[in-house]
Length: 276
Ligand SMILES: [Zn+2]
Image 1: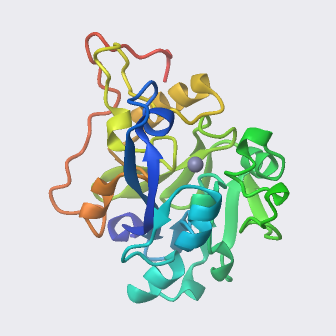
Image 2: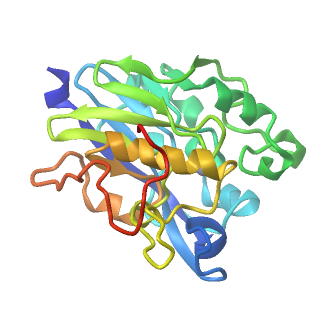
């Protein structure tokens, strides 16, 4: 049975600097920098070997075009897989939460994989608002994004990719952002991409009576908030891409993994959307 066998392995592909105010937290402490990991995931269902996002490139390219970055002891995702004893040629599916630069690097090295993304994300990646040229490594910057020339299979809305692995829309950070729901023996683990940067984003900011202290990077704050509520309804456990805590465990689920309570009411910090 694939659910009993399903394992999720986080891979940190490097570190980059981010501002706590203009990036990580809505109305957060601006000017304060933090260093965040750039994580992607290898999902082994026993029948399928799946990558969810593929991480960042070398530190030089990342720093030149994006944020001050360093690899430290991190590897590009295909090399990290090799070190784990998995040949990148064995990966049969790459699911992308979105096509930002730090989620798609090295994707062409998974040369036997089907590439899956939402239709809205693919369209936006090739023609983003100018404010997002950099995030998608637009040709106007004189570089070529890793996804250029790739054939994608597109999904619209919720879709089952293989038994026990489903995508569902979580727009807000980008118009076509999606999250990946993975059924495991411990419960439903949701790989949230950049819908949630860090675990703290999913906790309340009681000073402001916000149920979630959402991130600052979104194309739609309304969609982004709704996506938080949607993830809250579905997830027994979440795995974000930019929280170092994720790397404390080499594999998920692990024995004794604490499960969250779905859509738990918190006095003084209400939900906004009904019927989720
Ligand atoms: Zn992103």
